[in-house]
Image (cartoon, rainbow, N blue to C red):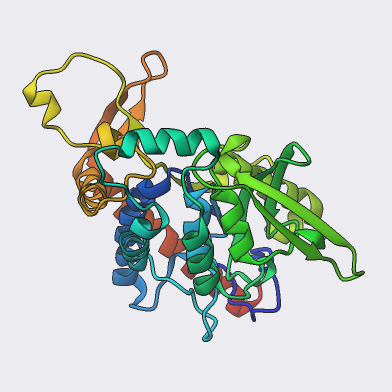
Length: 356
């Protein structure tokens, strides 16, 4: 879907577009494993349709994410040496399973709770050193303008007291935001009380230095879907409808996959049969963002796998409860989405080949 650019050129407007395709991933710390499981399934379905080399970045015009979702965004869109995505979707959970215990080390001593409370009162619960090193190691010197498809990652600048949106759509007009992906990811992941705020600088072509003092983007922009749609709409306004072959208000032509990381179970009475139903409403350590024990991480994988088998649900606006809307499972809905994404990509490729 996204044009395969050289690492030195930003993604270009999809001039042969029928739909704008958007992937959005919420924050949630270690619970990023849940959307990781969903994305691995979707990419495997695309590979069945279009071959083993198919990657999500080929099909989505923009990938957006906050906090842990921002990290997943960068993993899917950053180029490797062959100018293909650095990570396949199936690699995301392996990254979390291997590295989360080192990012969020667990104290198993009898006084762990008291020690954690003292730590929290003094400053962030974790020092972030391993997170910083592993993100810098994996993403290297890749900058925002080099991603294989457009990305949008919200952060919050605690010195400016305002959100800072790192957007492929805006990097030309605001080159001071053309930061290293590693710095952007560390910034959007710096959840208050868990990880320290993150400072870095960029220098624009004129030599002007800009300082960033960032924390978790979810503090002010906890809906990356809305931020992505806003960025696309502004880009259409800026570039003109001819660049996208659509108007900025044609939201019916936006094809959006928005992935959460589970929700905390609301307080209610339930019996043993109800408690045995494992879904994306999380309780106990499953609902935490940092309990990175082997057991909890593996259980989060199971939550994602079980969610695929469950019926498609929608929030009842009156009660706030998820309710099934039809007999289709999430797995079946993702297969349907894969076909839509594949069809859109083939349509664009065909139009591009004949220059229409």
